[in-house]
Image 1 (cartoon, one colour):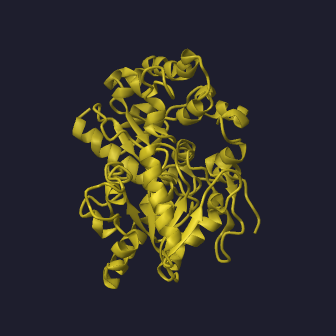
Image 2: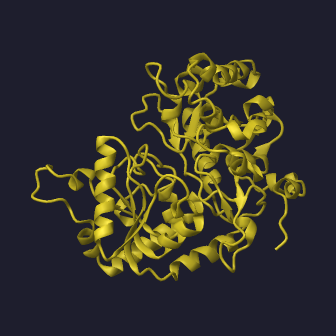
Image 3: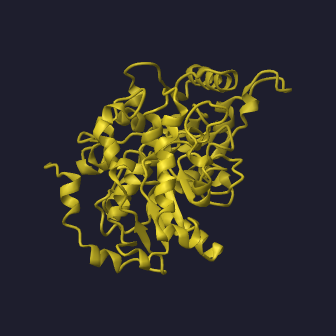
Length: 421
């Protein structure tokens, strides 16, 4: 299939026809900021992350490299090897072409600040100079304060999106990361991040999904994939994709999951390690998950995991071991009711020896005793969540469903109405 450059196709979009479809009074102004705050950072893409060359990942406006070999019936340009920490770029790309965007700030009710804060932070993780780590964040605050639209409500109607976890922007005691989220001006804004601090006292952090690999143009493409996952044969009761972790708490849970999965005839283990691994191959990840009824989602380096959203994309029911992996994170995106309708929860303490019980809980036993009819209902609920957890292709003009960006904007609009600013 002929591949088309993302930026070239965007030029054919009719803004006027798109804007007319935005209803409810919501309108968003996208700041046209100096390049140093976003796209200018990409010029040095090989140094945007201390551990990874980000050049392949920032291609196609953050979608990454196309997966033309994904599935036989798939349109190649809807599947990409998207990096887990790139949501800020994808959100920006979607907003440039979004029907709720207005070009005149006088008509705007919300103001989007397209700052690639995650890429800035990860480029300086090993910088011993704390002032240098905070430099661009401080300049961002200065820039916003100079704008008349900021002064109107002191940033209460502004928001920014971060592709990394909040912990990377909450430096304490001269430790890891920068101080972006500690800046008073930023605390006035709404901050959308792939992992919020569950104990956020400012109440300005909101969790958004990690991007997965599927970026459809239309509802037809979404429904086609959903139906494929409904019909997928799932010979594995459960699976775990991950590797060991350092630290007493993280290591204990991960080691126990790996042990139980490797010893079970009903579990598929895809163990991750240093260097090349199948667990970094989107095709292998989705293959394992789409053949599993349940997918274990242990906390990683922090509470949340991109794997949670991969499992939803594969129609695999997630099994959580901490409430902070999803339940306290993504209130805009997951149902507010009974979490047991779409997930299983096993307290991580039940997997540790010395927890007061005679033995460690058997994950296999817990999952096997769930009735088949309930499993089917849960899987249906998971598959129905796909659209709102997916980042549509930035060039989509007649999507036909609410994707993650639409859901976030709707929630931001509701928040603004409550603040009455």
